[in-house]
Image 1: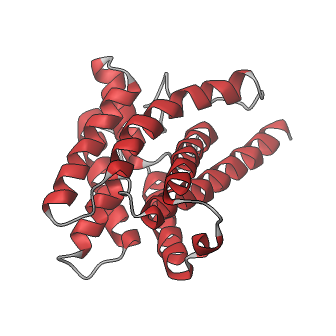
Image 2: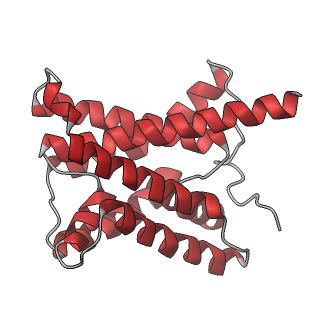
Length: 214
C-alpha cells in the first residue's frame, strides 16, 4: 500500500512538473525577450522543416537518449521520450491559445515568472523519478562520469542547442541568457529544498542518475 501511494505521488509530481515546465517555456516565448535554449533550437529547426515544437523536442530527446545509451551501454528509457513529446505538445497548445495575453505583467515580469516555472517544473520532474527530461538525463550522466557540477554539464548541452538553433534562425535574446543562468542554477537547490524542508521524497537521481532497470 505504501509503495502504491508513493508511486501515485510520484506520478502527480511528474504530471505537475511537466505542466509547470511547459507553462514556463511558453512564457519565455511570449515574453519575446528570448526563449530557452531548447526552443531556440526547435524554432530554428521550424524555419527549415515542417515540424512542430513537440516533434522537434522529441528529436532532441532521441539524440540525448541515444547518447546516454551508447555511453552507459544500457537500453534507453522510454519515459524521457514521452516527457519531451508531452511538454512539446503542451507548448504548442499554449502558443495556439496564448493565455498569457491576460496576464497583467510586463515582458520582464513574464520572463521572471518563466524562469521560476521552468526551474520548478524541472525539479519536480527529477524528483518524481519518472520520465526525467532527456537533457537532464544526459547532463546527469556527464556529471556521474566527469564529476562536474550538474549546472555545468546541463549548461554545456543547452549552449550547444542554443548556438545550433541561432545559426538556423531561432530567436536569441536576454531571456535565453536568463534561462542558462537562472533555471540551470535553481534546479538543484529546489530539489534539495523539497527533499529537506517539505519532506517530498527524493529518489536521489542527482547522486545516482544511472540507476535503471537492466
